[in-house]
Structure formats: C-alpha cells, structure tokens
Image (cartoon, rainbow, N blue to C red):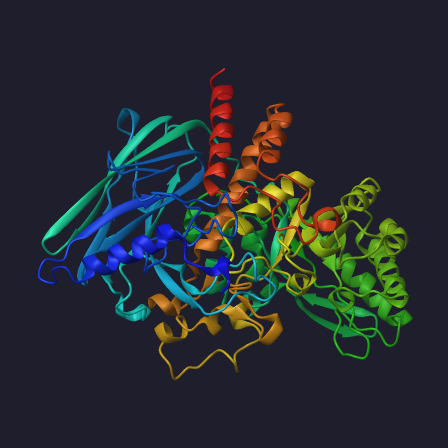
Length: 636
C-alpha cells in the first residue's frame, strides 16, 4: 500500500462522524455552518480540506479548522477579514448536514461600516460551488497531486435576489448520497473611493436558512486606509485562442471578467481587413475598431458597458499586432506570407506599408498610444535552429524599419540557450521563457542588455515531464500554484505568461463535446476538465473560466476557484508594488522571501516541489503584515 495515499486520521474521523449522523434521524434534518478563507477547498463528502494532506507536505493546514482557522472563530460565530479599498476579499461558508436536506438558502446582507457607509449590492457576490470529479492525478504529479476526489471548482452565480439555493445532496452535480456538505463562495469588493468605503470595521450577517431551521454567521471586514491601484503592475497575459471566435458582446464579458480578476487575455491574430494589390495596401479599420476600440480607450471597463470593479476606465495593458510569418512549408502570414526563407521585395514593401498604416492609426488616438504594442511571430514559436534565428532577426529589422524603434516590443517565446540569445538579444525586447529553461543568472544577464523577461509554464516541477504543459492551473494541485504566480513574478522581477483560461473549447470538440448529454453531466465528467490524453493528461489545464451553459446563462463566463486564487496572488503583487512605491521595497522583499523560500523553478530548483511554504494561512499573514504597514504609512 502507498502510505502517502492513506486518508489522514482527521479526515477519517470526519468521515466516520458524518456517516454516523447521516442516518441518525431522517425526520429532523438539520445543518451546521462553518467558514474558512479562500486558500483551501473543502471535500463535499468528508468536510475536510482537500489540502489537509501532511503526508504530502508537512506544513499543509490540518487540525480542527472547522472550529477555528485564520478567518473563522466558531465560538463567536465570526468570520474576520481584512482588505484595502479597490480590492476583492473572499471567504467560504460550508453548509454541512446530518441527513438529506432540500431548500437551503444562503444570503448575506450589506456590511455596515463607519458613518453609515455600506458595502452591498453587486459588491457582495455569493456563488454556489460546482464539483468536478478527478479520477487520477495530473501527469507527472504523482507526489504532489491531492489525488482523486470531488473538487469544488466552477462558481455558479447567485440567483437574481443575491441568494444561493442548494440541496444536499445536489442532484445536478451527481455526487450522490455521499455528499454531506456544500461550499458557498463569498466575494466582497471594497469600493475604491474613501468616501464610499472609509477605513474601519464593516459588519453584516450571513444567513443560512432551510425548512425548519436557520443559522447566522457574523461577518466583520476591517478596511484599511489605502487603495490598491487600478492598473495591473504585474506584466503578463494568459494566452487565449477562443475569444476571437465569440460574438463581440460575449467576448466583452470575458474581457471584463479578466480585468476584474487583474489579468489580461493574450489574444493573437486580431487583424483588420486588408486588400493588397501589388505593393498597394488598403486597410479597412471599421470592423477592427468596432471590436477593439473600447479596450484600447478603456470604455469596455465603464459603467456604461456594465463594468464594475478595479480598473474602471483603464485600457488593456497591451495588444498583440497581427504581423506574422508562415511556418515552414505552411500557408499563412499577415499581411503577406513568405515564399521560402524571406519575403520578396514586393512582400517587404507590403509589410512596411502595413506597418506605417498601423502606427498612423494608433497614434491618431491619444489614449491608444498608451497601450503597449507587441509583435509575436507565431510562425517561429519555440523554434530552435539557426534558420529560425536568422528569420527572427530579419523580421525584427523589417518591423523596426516600418514601425519605428521603440514603438513596439518584439517578442519571442521559448527556452532559448545563451548562445542563441547572444545572437537574438539585440533584436528582441521581450523574451517569454519557459520555466523549465529559466536560469536566473542567464535571465539577469540578458535583462541587463535590455530584454524584458516573462516566465511561462508550471511553477512546481516534480520531474522533467511536467514541462510538457504551459499551464500550472491543474485542479488537483493546491491553490498556491495559482496564487504563486504573482509572488514568483515579484521575486524574479519578471512578467508571466500562462496557457489558456478557456481551453475546453479549443482542441477537443470531438473528444469532449457531447451535445446529446446535458451540461450537468458533461461538466461532472472529469474529461471535460482535462486537456490532453494518455501521458500528457492534466486535470483542468487551461480551464480557469467555464462557459455559462452550466448555469443556464449562455454567453456568460463563470469563474473558477483557481481563478480566484490567481486573483489573490495578483492583488498581493499590488501590495508589494505599493510598498516599493513608498520606499519600502526591502520590506516587500523580506515578506515575499519569508514565503517563497528559494528561487522558483529554473535550473537552481528544477524538480523541487518545496519552493514555498504550503499553508495558505502563512501567505495570508504576510499579506496582512503588508496591509498593516501600508495602513500605517497612509496615516502618517
């Protein structure tokens, strides 16, 4: 028997107690309610943390956390949270039953604060967890996977009145009679303006009601006297291949969800209509501008467009221009393709004219000028041979001639070695390096030569095979692999890139989409939450956002708990950025180094799964220390 897969004693006790009480008295069902923070997930069968696995990491959370944890005091019936303005803070309410119970309703009234201020309405959002069934560990993660089981992941929105309604067992989720509890996720957004959310303590009651009974939890939120910035300072994006195929209004909702969660979709291939006759280039901007102008000027993120949250009116941080070369032996390329290893003289003239028109069009709009322009030649993606390096240099020179030095960033993706980069660095502005090939001295060397660096891929490696996936969003790893993106970016002073947030819809329609089956069955089947098959199978890879069919709302994205964890890490990054702005960079570094113990990924710690502390409450204590420091600085 594998002793690492034995259920911990605390979980076994919980299972035994739940089994005993389940059949105690079917005529008098009742419920208990407890709460926890946003860094763990609760098993719907046992009621234990999925992360309660000291057999994997000794410092994982364990003990009697249903009675007391960093966010919860059962003796007082109190949930205690801390936040800045312009920040989301979250917790989870767990409803546990001793017999099947239908008609449960969970609601949270407005939080009342100093001077009659209130945080309520859309700033309080409840979500019902949707569970996915993982049947085996993600490929290559035999030691750190939390293993098979039911994982809360998608977060279904509350009903129109703001309440969540559920049954235990939940019939649509198909867990069955073994389900004894259900998680309700609570998001609280603290408005940006001090007049709307002055510092102090805000309180309200979370009510869980069912036929014949009711429980209340007191929620207390301490709001500090500073605001997180509207801009996203952690540079990077999550590559996406599906938004361009959506209708513009559905696409807008995805951009707004990304903006609200402090990340940017990295969409390749937005291109205006173009007609080419010899060397004459006629670009029609109508459709391009109609679709994208609202992202370039920030109008997409205003109340007029239905947006609320951080970054109101702030444009997207960057856009990828459509210039591209075709891969060897393939068609494609924009505005025209190569014929062989180079463009023809006529083709070069077309590229230069298209460049001129692009620059002229963007420079005509003062706000658009602030959006960084990036050119990434997908036709040369992760190409490791001399002919490819020659082409990268060739196109860099051509683009600089047409767009102008410094007007755009020329990006390459791949784990290039030092000899390759010695050729490329004079022509490259942005290097997205796979975490498997990251070596900090090498990155610092080329960063000193003017190359901006982003990392791409998993943060935690057990073995070399983990490098086969550009994502670290796996369902069966703990949530710190999502939260850690922002922390690793700070520690390495780097940007980041991830692979996908809507991956289910890209490559697997024949294998995954089964339109004859209802959505609830398809979204329970774990194959809908995995990318790849056989040795490359990863649970939930690239699936941070679900589509709204699951909640009966086609065209409306549904966030996952893993996306919320990534948001938490991106907000943490802004704490560190604010400390640096306040001349407290050494404090920010000390706090990050107290959690991220060694340089993450890369040659120094490749295949080391212990790069950080594994208890999310330790991370929370650091955030609170940073928040209290910024609060004191604001009051000086």
